[in-house]
Image 1 (cartoon, rainbow over the protein chains, first blue to last red):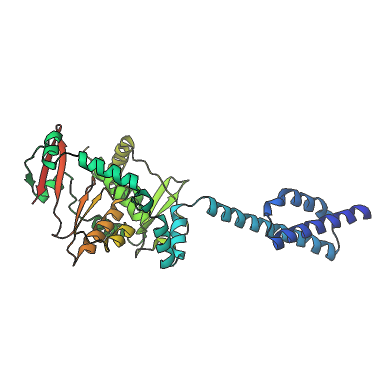
Image 2: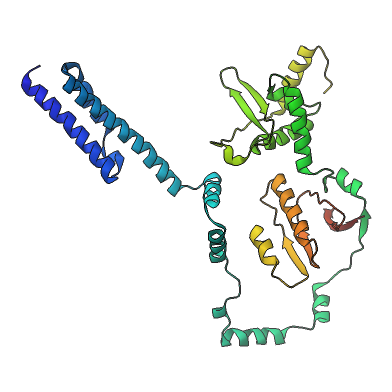
Length: 278
Length: 81
């Protein structure tokens, strides 16, 4: 390698180190550094370095680029937080606020309908004119055509049967399904999702899948997805986890098409040697 | 709802009406808020008139339930006894 080229190479590496140090020290936008270009420069000269001081300079430049990549990641995360606030981030932010701060924010966002400036002499005279023009209550109800209705009665059980009322607290349903999941998961600690939600009827399966989604959302259990094997397992937690412990929340849509449900039932029936009535 | 209930503690009126407060809640939160509403009234003389289109479950006997259903074009009002 000609000495001149080697000198230029060292100069390039020093420039990289200086630029990265300046970005880091001054808190500049780390995307000002084009990492791909910098790595190309390092690659270009790397095979030529022989002496320890040359190799050290090369390592230093690479280390500085790694720092820039880290800064880019943090910068992106920070920007994403300030531009987009999802429920998780909002919850995190609320947790960091003191009670006084939360109360102040609520008060600032509360706008009573009647404000002082709305009560003017003009609006008061308008209100009085409107009030005086109203018919007495008895006459008003006649024109509206108020009709008295006879009230029927129904028992709580009838209302539960009609699904107007719920027979059991939702949290109670979740707790009992969680207990069932823990029993079925047994020593292995997990059970196939479809084996767990499958019921004798399609409606029953939908209901179990619906409740299971709450078990996962509210951290009674978690899903284990094996995309290659196309298997989904559900793994119960021994105790209810706080949602704050969760690192990252993602949504997993699981469709339950009727046709697929029929096939699943047939497969399950065949494997257990039972005939399943549809 | 927490803010609304906090404000209600300083309201003198014995009757309060809340319309469809739970429309955007999932069933678990709906239940939590329903319990919070009833427990906030314990020991006070106030009553709430709550209107909800959702299936509900209120614990305890201090709840009076009236259902209004549109059956063949006319409103059928039933009191749950």
